[in-house]
Length: 381
Image 1 (cartoon, one colour):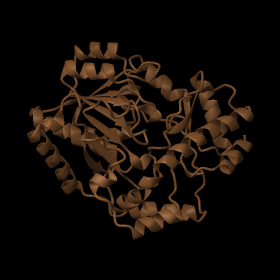
Image 2 (cartoon, helix red, strand yellow):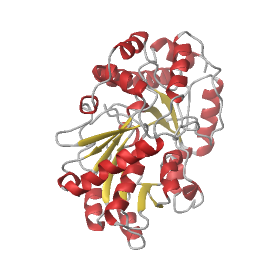
Image 3 (spheres, helix red, strand yellow):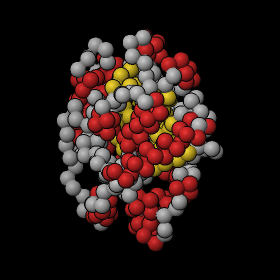
């Protein structure tokens, strides 16, 4: 069982035969009326583009980006190279921003950009974040990388919205940045601001381009996997994130192969959403029947499209014990995220983020998984 979805043979053939759609056509499932859409290889580059845009508009020597302390460090590489200042704000037990703590932090450092994350496909309440951004003159960015496509509560409040189709679909890369027409800062109403945004986007692509080898390597690996040639399941330590170790952030431009594949996959989103929900329920039901997760508290009950099937345990010791047990049984278990060093260095301030990281485990739910694979895995427990 793979951690990421595999394309089917028919999807690969369709991608080779069908010319890629235009930007407006390919972004249609994620774009609401009046929104401006631009494509990058990954959302880390979308974040960089927004930061450079804000800096160009304000003329500030540096800008401050606020992010939740439960966040993937690998996604911050382009921003770190730019030299932005980071402020990691705490989350509540429900994984929404602790706005009381944010208001206190704002007395010390005000945000230029405020990132609101919709974790694991679940909408995060945004109304208070909108009010906070208006009071601090910050742009609100909705990070919907874990969300398959817009749903109620996602993509309805921010100045910008980030989606990462490559996380949900069998494509080597591809992330779309939406500049919202009705965002709090009304950015699309400012012609000069949008001209600067297009310049930033164009400059990033011209400066860095796209990888010529990475999509080809991805395709070779997927073809081998479709032929049944699979590498041994990698083992990792409990404190190592297996999903993002090899993230390629060297090129911001979406590849032509991704465009072709995505053009062929747009009609399958309903099926992908249904399959992911069914696979989450399948993992949970089979694990319950096997009595192998009696210690777990289930993380998901709502009917939104899940990014993972997630499980919460009562403490770090038990979580690591279950992690090792599942790994020995060859379940494709993972942890998330690889926390930023600023967070791990301040254990008291970011206690909740560290607890979230050390008491949760995840299993894939992507559309390439079938019942027999899950049954075989669970049978090994």
